[in-house]
Amino acid sequence: MTDTLVSIDPRRTALLVMDYQNGVIGMLDEPDELLSNAADAIATVRRAGGHVGYVRVAFEDTDLEAIPPTSRMGARVAASADAFRNDSRETAVHERVAPQNGDIVVRKVRVGAFSTTDLDSQLRARGVDTLILAGISTSGVVLSTVRDASDRDYRVLVVADATADRESDVHQFLIERIFPRQADIITTAQLEDLLSSS
Image (cartoon, rainbow, N blue to C red; front, side, top):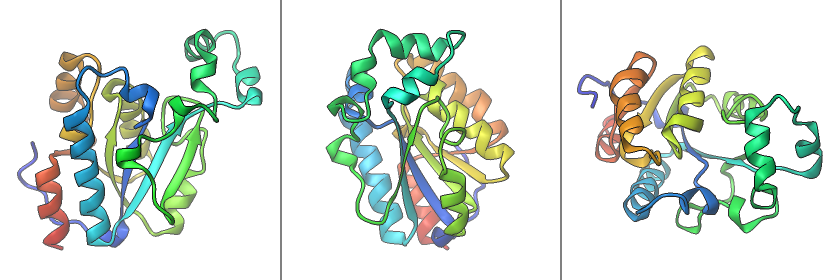
């Protein structure tokens, strides 16, 4: 974990809660601690006056029709299209970490948080320059969003204990070896210190 971080301005910071959807959480063996950590991170950012954003993957009929046959993601989605529909209970954000009025909420139709949403413009309109990422899965939405956010010149932090992958060794490898090239790795406990010391 990162020891040399300086405090961050919560007014210019957004916590992105990514793919914390009923269907995705249902794929994890023991999600209770992860949900508690995410809820703690959300509460910490709210108390500090920061922004909270939600990214969820869900498809309308037109989205499904637009996926070309060359898309690997398209093949996975097509195999269980009903579970990925925008109005499905499976694509709703889990109630323990649900959005509140005034939060950013975007619906995506690809892996990363930015490419098929207006997330970047919503963040810029709020003056956000620092992103704190929590998501499922580490090898999916989190990896894609770390890369894209870094390319967009955001300061990026990943909350390791509010991020998970079905393959724990992949999660550890990304957290320890790959993400530190473009992001600071923190825990929910460190998040409180970073925001309160600004």
